[in-house]
Length: 70
Image (cartoon, rainbow, N blue to C red; front, top):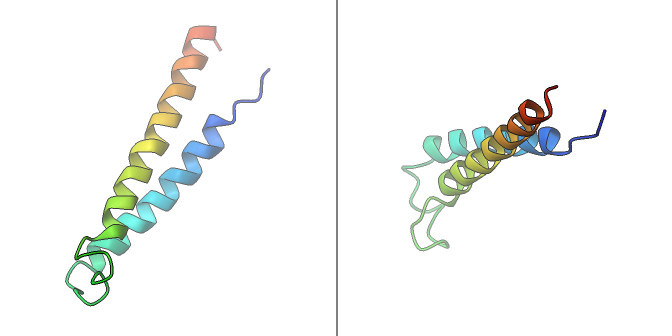
């Protein structure tokens, strides 16, 4: 029974990614908010990358469990 840190990290990044993605979609029309980031929707892009990273962590933890036969 080993401690797999990938599961809580994957869940944390996935939840934060969902929140940021929803915030980015909800504020996509607010150009004043994204003036400092050269007009890029930083919340949306950060949320998408966090979702991808969290999904990758959860997927690798599941594959390692399957390899060990747990």
